[in-house]
Image 1 (cartoon, rainbow, N blue to C red):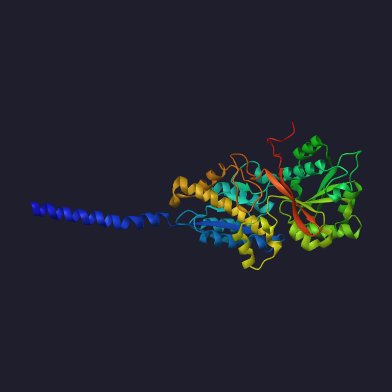
Image 2 (image 1 turned 60 degrees about the vertical axis):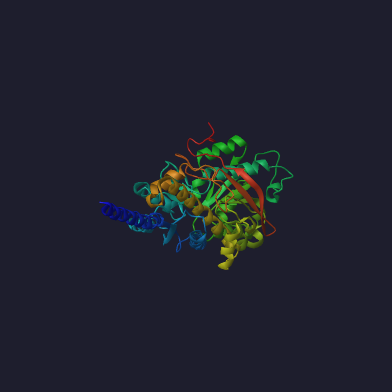
Length: 425
């Protein structure tokens, strides 16, 4: 009897030892997961000049993120896949459907960094329950709130903030030469938009914005629109100058902005307005494309446009790829976007466990994200159940004799979407 008990005891010990031996392997296997993230850009269409750099910055960011100790949760890697939309809605939908139909299902996507393509993705993201974080914040993308999130201030708000800057500096001693030269104590300052003739360029002109500008004493001039690839913009420019515009907000990217400045110089009106770059216009590229004509230009943005603002690893990435300052917006931008993805992943893993994370978990993390100070960004990010644009503040940069200088650390971006806190009653 004693011998039989001893045998049973030995068997028990061996079984316990075997379980202990395999437990660490099982636990590790459950944590060792790879999430798919889909990045869509216009690599062959009208936005390709900027988006090629965005795609490069994306690839470099994820390479860094997967190697950086302690950045992602233990045992977690991210596989990023890049797709070209050509800035075409049909191509974007096809790419999205193909990417999200593969296993494992991605936990997040971008929407092509263009108003039309994100609009195409919006219903698909909601249906598939995969959050889409992107750059465009045109009203139809933000309202009604769905599974699409934006890393820039709402279009209405950034225009309103620019109008506020114009109003605050409407004085004879304004630090901005192009505003100072327009000052007239007998009238209100005047602002308008010159935008691309698409959902992006036309997205700024809204009743809420016009009401807000009227309330602060800034007059609105009817905006002008140009094609994505214009050949002559002098009629639009001359109409704005004739109407007495003081500031033009450029709803476009740097290539077209520079083209318009050259037209303005050709007909002798470059000094007749203060130009303000849209959030992603890229004042660095504008300087490269327009040269002397870009002097005095302003840019309102959350992106970090100067290398000295960046974390060291990001600057090392840029230098390793032998890219110049023209890539500044793209590199700081992608680091900011995808750091928000990674923060949502970190929170999701903490809540449900690495092996259980799905797109819905990132969505829940995003709508509870408040004042998140993301990498390489001037603006803190806050989303909630109804707010789909992250930043409520921005910085202002200026071309000062060819050097890009941050002239305002932080300006408030009014919430002028329907029902927003700053809508004039």
